[in-house]
Length: 322
Picture (cartoon, rainbow, N blue to C red):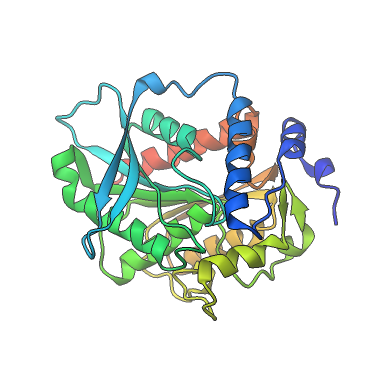
């Protein structure tokens, strides 16, 4: 195994060392520890994400199939010109499916709304093991359809909707793109996949090379997938998008991977296979970065670079004809 610290950008070394270990044997304990990790990362931020420039509202979306209430957090640029419909980003937080909530990537959502001049709808999807697949993905699809249908009433542009997420949230965004294609669902301008967890088979070279990095032990990876899949085998391609064999007609993608990350190669492989099937893909591998580096080290130059790239990708997608 490589000495992880020796492979990292100098600004990321201390952040990597500070990441608390979050075991996923006990989901309830994992949620508490993950929340502490998020709080630590936010405390490292020298300045806030200028929330005064974004209006933030907690709300609920009613699922059309059974009327369940799905909590969401809606971000709107302050002073937005309501005569011009805003594009929308549907965002899913990370947390190994089991952990995470609307606070996990609050700062990122503020940044996206402010700098990409869009509404952001962050989804508090149901989590396993209490709610295994397809509960989380069903929640996200329900929100996607409602966002599209209600866009006009909310001052949004239903023809300019992007989806995105990090890690497990990136998995949900990828699965959502496949589901929307197969069901002839709402049009998607971009799938923003940030170091996504895509493959339950756990056989990539990077998985073997980086078994322990940034507070994550790959022995927890089978646990994560077991919680999410609820014992289903083999996994459906909506649950593990890397199992998909045909990407024709899937939404354009921006894929970010980190060099020092067990998930690196499955993200690269996924991007390349989408490209081979004619999907427009922008692939970024951030050298000397670890999984979740942009959350763990909010002030680092690599983080600023990554967030600027993500904002640029959103703005470009929203500017393209639907």
